[in-house]
Image (cartoon, rainbow, N blue to C red; front, side, top):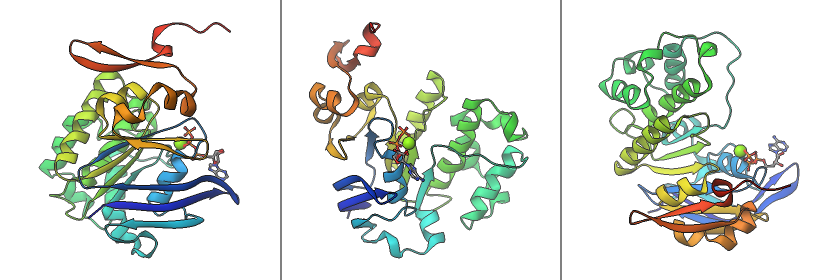
Length: 267
Ligand SMILES: Nc1ncnc2c1ncn2[C@@H]1O[C@H](COP(=O)(O)OP(=O)(O)OP(=O)(O)O)[C@@H](O)[C@H]1O
Ligand SMILES: [Mg+2]
């Protein structure tokens, strides 16, 4: 059974269609990367997949049943969303921010702070030394890793046996290369437990190397949803992102290189 299945979705904003005729399905343990230009509708689609934005037409099935009919707190435990942006308008220590989020999903947040799974997540994301800090005093990358820890801890099946799907909107934003690599490893570990992922970002080369499948949005539709080598072809990348790209062989691996990585553009 699919974790998620969309049939012929139309997604509107302010009454205007943003995306049309969008169908896709996602199985347990799959890692789908979702790419497309600024404003093409990635975050709006992710909100629709999270049950926070109603499609104008079409249906979303989540774990075999209509998403729209799911009880909100059960949905909060089954599908975990990292929004693209999040501002907290009051002072809060990192540990309190984490416990409040977990409590909102119906868990004993205080107890989770002592759970070995949380300690492992803190080490994996390098936030164990930040728990007593005020959230507004964190650097951009530190805050992003704290937000990720809140979401990834909820995905741990041994803490939350109902977790099925992670929807991550630009999770690599503000992370340095080492922390990006740590996050990719954490995602693989959770996918191996059976969690399904939809990950929005702007790095075709990273999707080429790490995605199970890539969904490419452009021209108000899903241009491709296929393994990286079939979705991230030069013609499709030119249509979706307006960049030229080629595949090169490096020490036995195929890597995708866009023109941005190769040479400055003359205006
Ligand atoms: N709440 C809203 N009300 C009206 N229009 C919106 C709203 N949110 C987004 N939009 C518009 O809908 C379109 C799609 O926005 P969305 O945030 O889904 O894009 P995106 O693909 O995630 O872009 P980015 O890569 O910049 O994050 C944009 O033109 C945006 O201005
Ligand atoms: Mg977005």
